[in-house]
Amino acid sequence: MLSLDAVLVGLVWQEIFFQHLGQQGHWKYRLILGTAIWLAYMADRLFDNLALDSKKPTTRRHAFIRNNWKTILTVWLIVFTSILILSIFTLSKAEFIGGLWITLLINLYFLILKLSKRIPILGSLKEIFTGTLFALGVSYFPIFLLKDVAYETVGTQITFGLLCFANVILISHWEHTIDKHQQEGKLSQRRFDRDVLLKVLLTMLGCYGIYLVTMANELFSWAVLLSSMGLSILYLEANNRGYYNLKFLIDVPLILPCLLFFIF
Image (cartoon, rainbow, N blue to C red; front, top):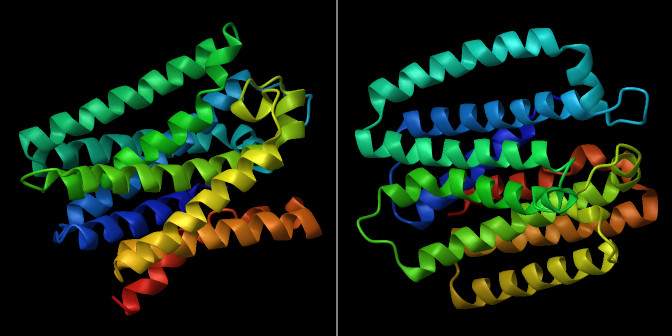
């Protein structure tokens, strides 16, 4: 309900990026990332509720936001002000400016969603932008600390972005009927077979995870394999048992790699 699972996903994968790139991340990077993820997700849901029709079917999380929006908005403003002050006084000028660029992209994302009611094709970018922006934000501080950024580093960002996209498109797949009633123009509402897309995407990620593990027995490789397998198992189990009973587990596959910290 409060998007804390998304925060946990971000912190786990930020740590994976830190270790994979041989960096020692300061506590401020973890606090700023976790807070920024929460602020972005809650803002997204607050904006969503401005456009959703309360008389039509809606998700439990959106109903929760609608019923408690005043409290959530108050907390949001307090948290935003606090983390902004912390960022100004603890980040370097270059780090802060880079963070502002990501913030600008997130606001552009909100603008695109606002325009999607008038220009339906823009709504199809929601899942793509969500995965892309999440991957950029999570990997920002670990990559910023590098002196040189190699093609391999960009590849790790793209791989994690695809995992995030698979996670989001699976949510959209499960909420397809609700989105249809709300006239959401998401990618999952386009005229294609969502099952085929998910099978291809999850199979591709699983195979690539196996390839990474055979090439390098290290944290990032196993994290990709474990998360892709977890998403695949969740997808298959939902087909057999129904997604409603398993929906609360949607972010667990991306959190599972935290178990690898005891090994690597």
